[in-house]
Length: 282
Image (cartoon, rainbow, N blue to C red; front, side, top):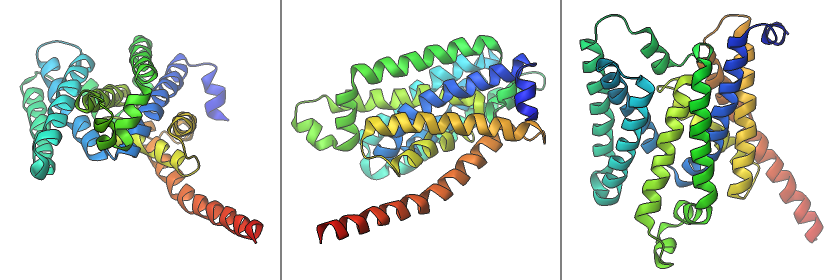
């Protein structure tokens, strides 16, 4: 109730709520591909490696978010190339790129004069400090994701579920796989200001994983994941307000709790449906 009362009086809370909803749209759509294609490790590598681009942008006097977007796309393409051409050594090389990206960021940050408070919000997230101008960038990134998925939904779905079948059908699998990783990179940047790059992988995967417990098609999974993400970001923001807890961490803890509760619940519902089907068959 304190949060709802404050929401009508403080514009920064309204901005934070809007940012959470915008982030939920991207994480619900692209997170579904991440869960289905099992790209969690790659997505984590992209998320952490963007620290290099953020540190470099800060050092040279540019917007860290712009550096994050550029480095995220570059790392997505690089990690995708490694995955496609270095099969056996894939995990090691991606882990190395992950670590090197973070190390480059640390080096640039160390050489940048002063204490960078804004960079701390990128690392750990602070949805309460998002300026209204960033909402337009988040909206633009959401638009890119929605348009790309709408234009190439069948191709991306084919690549996500069965690369070999898609290749036999004549689809340029490499192109659409790299496009999917670029969409993941855009989503990572979309979520950084909400929960920080350290926690971004959880918000990218948990709403979609929860949705996957209850629906069978990718389209429905996206819709449910967007709704779940919106409930988690809004609920986490509300729960963190009165006790003055970190909103990003609260959102992730709420998402983790929701997943833990959802897993046995979905299995119980499935078992119940199976028993009903068995009785109906008899």
